[in-house]
Length: 111
Length: 110
Image (cartoon, rainbow over all chains, first blue to last red; front, side, top):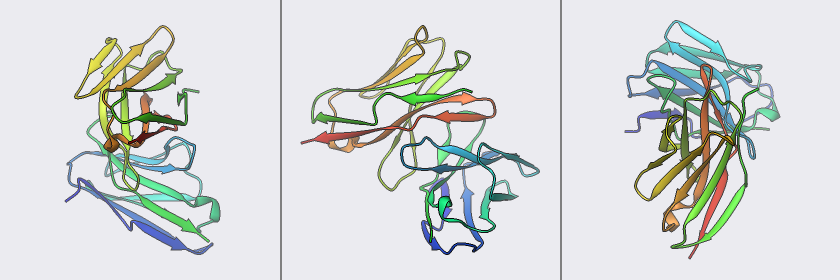
């Protein structure tokens, strides 16, 4: 099994719909992150969490929310999806601010 | 703000040749740097890192060079193979986060 598992791998949704992307990890890391990747741009941080009770906004948090259900689970929600949220989304974990382990990504298309 | 960037969006090399991928950064206080490899349909994978007190670090077929004077680092891949085809990007710490470059797509020609 992968160290960081993201579901779904691919999703097409309509504008205005609420959608949740899920991430689970078996690394035992405290820190978890959600990134967005767009063509020609580096990974951009949406939200991060350093433990179950800690949630922090990243560079591009508008239009997104997160939930850290357990040390191993960190989900990302789009409350009302819009087309410019079409992107590749990655979850990552780390033991500290070093050596991230990434999931395989979720390709989200908003039509 | 802090930035990390790569010099070329694409690089094409012949199988067996050496590849050099470059990266520039802005934060002179970064105490380490990481290179990642991202294959199509997969998440980024750690390749090699280097601490800021080092100039060079070698791994298996890969070498990272750090030039703090000009805030530049490079990833060298020896005897490039078809399996090396991927997007490569550098990353540096920025507060509680990492800054990632946009990536260089390496294509290996047979």
